[in-house]
Image (cartoon, rainbow, N blue to C red; front, top):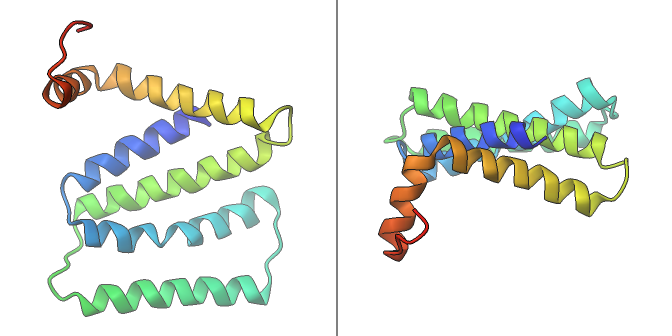
Length: 141
């Protein structure tokens, strides 16, 4: 839940800072594939021809766009982005499963609060620099 999103966000922004946005956007499209497979494996969702066709179209689109961009290169940071997309999909599986208990709004708030607080604590120095440079406001730090 919140920790999974923390991992996903941390990996995503690490990769985003190192590779082109157009590459990141192409890699993000694979999220549907991760969600599809995790839904089948972990949630027992159905495997239908329409879903398979949709995933095939996503894969085709990613390949077409990737191959048409000759200057695109696959790096270790591309793997970081793919891993972050996997963790986002895993978070969605947890959301789907845990959202059946209690109030969905409370769960969503708690989940993102855990992720946000974790990011602030782990990346304290970077957060402090970003806040200072953005707002020129140093009273709380």
